Length: 128
Image (cartoon, rainbow, N blue to C red; front, side, top):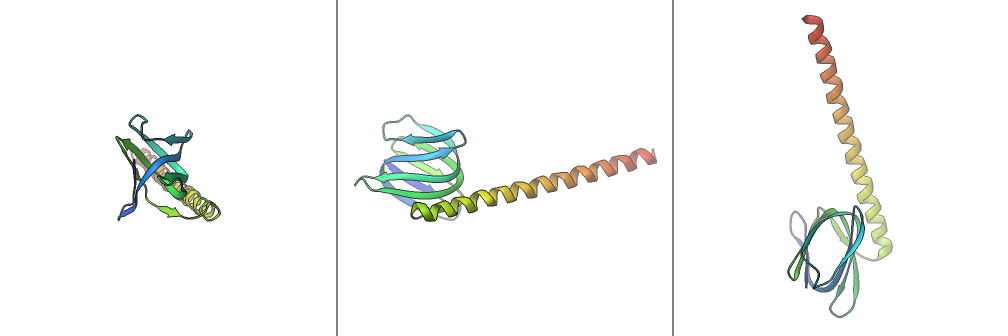
């Protein structure tokens, strides 16, 4: 089967593989050529794949979507890094910290919007 890793700007990987193992929000799962077609959300983590010669390779992905259709597995992600497991552990830690930082910023923006709404609502009540 063919593994295609797609980033926003280009194709990161296009290779024939025998097996893919990825992590979703509910845990890790594996895909082989004869598995049913599927789609799954990916959590930030390590994606491993085995090439036809039996070599095992690793990628760190920043979440994304995996789609298996026929003999093709496509992964759409914002960031991917290849390397050894030790290096990839650091990349995954950065990905998770980045997600945490963005969530913290989003929560702060929502809190500011709520506070502004409440202030305006109280001012409206005073003027009525």
